[in-house]
Length: 453
Image (cartoon, rainbow, N blue to C red):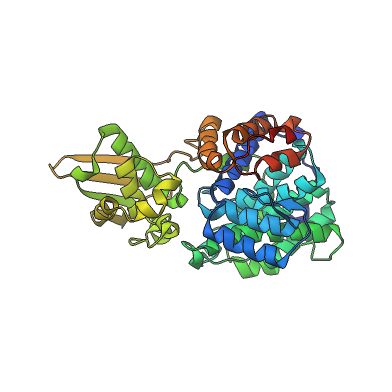
């Protein structure tokens, strides 16, 4: 009954069911996702995947962001989804340790562009896709993640399938099958964190979720009870599986409000430390050269996932609390540029990292840290962070998300196009054709053809 109830919720939900706050959250998610995708358009991992996909071919159905090229809807979801997670700057959800939008949004846009759907059609699929992602994550509890599975890879397929299924207008039985097809493809290991394989997980989840929904639409059979308590999915993934968490309060649609938007271009588990040291630098106007030592306390998982003491490249640096702490105290920021090669090799950052001690404090939650900075003259400054900037309890405003979007997007597509994207998303309900929005995201720096969109 769990799968049926969830599917019926997906099918019956309408935009009219949402508060203005929920609709605004969906718009913010869409803008943030586009910025993160465009910011990674030139990454080597994106080029490697793009080269392969275009060598193998595919019907020209959907656009690749940051490019004028098109490929099949499946390959567009794969590449755009991967692209949006490359920087590890995309939104996240601490409740279930996942990145809901990286698999969901590219799957939706791949279909919406080709079908020329109005912007209004994106809102309900985005909200229910997010809701399904979080609810299944809550049902799995944490045992599957702690055993080594990657939540974004496992949960993202369900969110993408639910969102695309909603967009395609699947009935409840076919939605059950779409979820079952997602379940049988679910996988992904945390061992790949800090490598190019992590964003590949997000892209593959987008592709597989889209594939699941479209195959269900075409009548491919699959079990109707894949999320029920006695299913193989439950037995394989978690001994703690609690399907009641999927259906309790179903219809509230408010899990999208538990979203975290990243102000720092690093693993979310490094954010409390970065936030603490950004604040210490700002409040006391510290010069990193005067620092004798830094001690930060973090929760056990934060150390396990983001405790890399000697990152070798920018990807590993995003999973290094010592590096994030160093750049935060040196620059007062942790933007994407702060994790690039020159910053990684900066002698001041490397010297400061040697003075940083990270220890585990089991009493801290994953959003907490306690940081102590000792100067060479003996002065001491402390900061306790319980909810870092970007957390739903300390949220980024739409204006702050817009500033982040512009910083990532404008170097790729230019200021005029970025401004037009912000305008379209702000008035998403009035957008008559999603292809117009996608087209703005695909042409680099050309301002003369804005009349085309």
